[in-house]
Length: 340
Ligand code: DAH
Image (cartoon, rainbow, N blue to C red; front, side, top):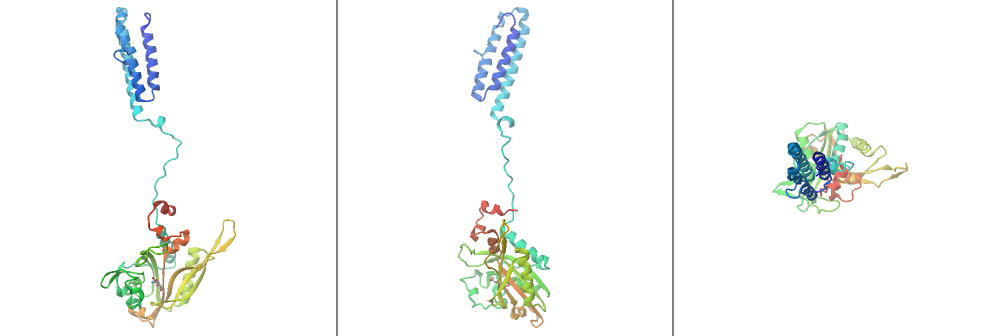
């Protein structure tokens, strides 16, 4: 310490100490800084305080006060730096240019989306939505639908029975009967829902899956109504160029019965077009007079048509999904691709 100006020496020391505090990058080097300046035996400020006796008596109070103030400020700076090193401040430690973490967005399941889109098209055509129980009786699931219990579909190999004559419905067709019983014609309904079968779990079968039932009953309904409605649905769902084909088939609850296929015209990004294969979308037909009579309606007066379609298959085709199981295994990386 210079004899002439101890205050100036103190100021220089403070400046140096504060700079050292600021540049300490971890807690160990900060502790070294503390020992170097404030350490009880070797510390440079402590040395100054100890050397006060060398200072002329009249200057001692002034120098002593100044030294204590420096000690105070350096201690405060040490503490502040210490807490910075424990909890890094936003500016010093965060890379503000780093992209943000995107917020998790929930979304509807792709099959739910297909069900909604299909239902909305029929709603716009004047249909109402109907529902029925998933656990139902053999009467509603089979017998009322003109399907005798010795029919292969009613076999325990195919159907999940709960107790005696109660089962998990194997199709949404029982909603036809329940709706007819609870209402008077005219009837125009769409009934989406879960159905259950003893199927092996593979790329195109799951033991629980979605179906969408459609039913129209009124006076004077013919197959022409069905063809026109279906063609309109297909054009709205797949596009105006979609072709529809009806193939003869057999179901116990319809006569005549038909399977419906659609063929799509796809436009590539370069403007060229190609046709898809025919794809089967539903079973259908004119409601069998026995079914109409089972509902308590006069089959001479009322006729109607019905269909059952599989939105799972429709969603697979729409998204180019090869394995139905991926829709049910709840791998969020797969499902979030469809979120919207
Ligand atoms: N219930 C039939 C099935 O699950 C599908 C079906 C065919 C429903 C013809 C109908 C129909 O309403 O008319 O395979």
